[in-house]
Image 1 (tube, rainbow, N blue to C red):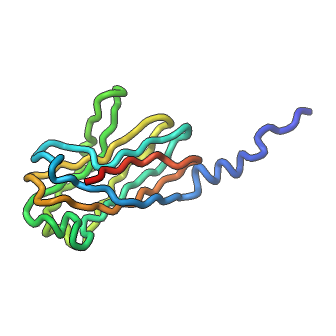
Image 2: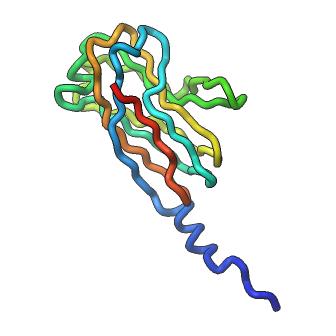
Image 3: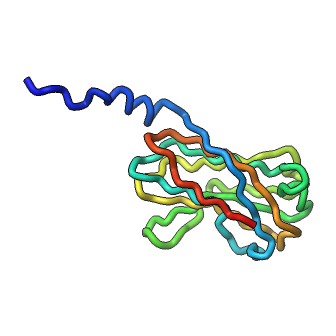
Length: 158
């Protein structure tokens, strides 16, 4: 009888589907690059050679002094997931959009459910504001995911 080739299968299953992993960082909104009412990318998440599962992104909107709530008061912000379904053109997923003013964002964060990112694919977290940004902003984030390998994260620097 041949040797069982999948001796690490239970461990790989556990690592891919059961172990929740967390990545943290800070992305920025660059006042000079942001344009009113035009969506722009604030974070890119790229899966490597393995799928990512149960991906959620948490954006802190209330960082003291330099966060969205500290910089803005009446401008609205919407955060959402965008996918390149055709492999080229990123389209926003409308059902995960939520609008908050700077005043309403005090002491708040926003969870953006991404779901699955297939191996080799990339998703973007995009923002759109109702008015021109008053100043540069810093947005701390956490990304929760399940998978065998960590995604590549690209942040925006102001």
